[in-house]
Image (tube, rainbow, N blue to C red; front, side):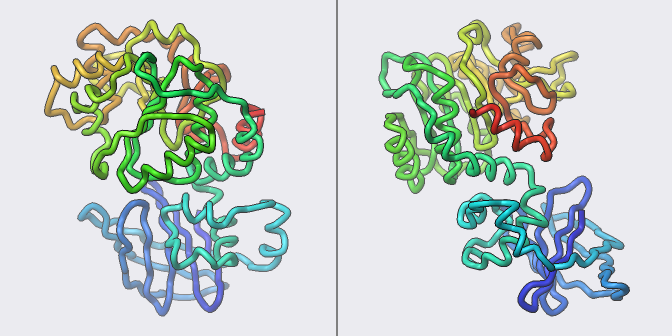
Length: 369
């Protein structure tokens, strides 16, 4: 999907390159500025080849990424009329929160665009609403009034509890409180809440605890350079005193009540649509939203070292090798879904991978009402 639009004497082009991430590209005086997710801004000089019928043909754009180059050739960006976009925006997206959009869209330079609502409306209309994770967070915020009214068990962190909700992230954004409510609703007062984050984010998470009348444990870590490496470290699991954990992330979703049958299994995650491990027929183990036996995670990390694999593939494979991966496909479906949609799952991870964007709004609304 390639879009071109013009605001305040500036040209903006949004290009989707197959097989790679999406890039937000701004053109000014024949210089293209590229913002990439979690990467520094790259400046790339390009040349307009020709302009025919409002179609800009750009050739041989070289984009630096991981010390490699992506050759994007013969990209046609058709000009889209600006007429009526500003007028129809309030009807299409009532109460749109521009600050929330900036905060949750790493492709945007918040300082540069935070107060430029005109640009943000165009950016959302042509770009943001097609970004899966950003659209998911937009929907959480859209239904914030419903989520914030959900009655949740008032969890109090105590050493007597043997179960904990687990969240690990060195960032903070305001979508967390919606996820916190949904996941706390899914459990009961026998659960703790444990968050691993950096010192600068501690106060934000504490404030969300306070807003929900909850208490939890926050463990300070350094900036996460490698999430999988952190979770493959036995000392990480040793720092969690509870026996069981329900791990969730910013792209997780909770749709019902935790089923105690899950306590019978060592590791549960959504089914993969392929087998990424070296174990034939092993399709279970997406870790983004997952249930885990903490001490077993610790023992696997202690036994198997020097792995560079994604942490969920690592655990799924090593548990299977040791005869400890006792989860069935039926239980995995009951627990969660990601790429393979399941109507009856209690949890989800990146649910937009199996639910079209045209149906995601209705799906989320139905699940939280």
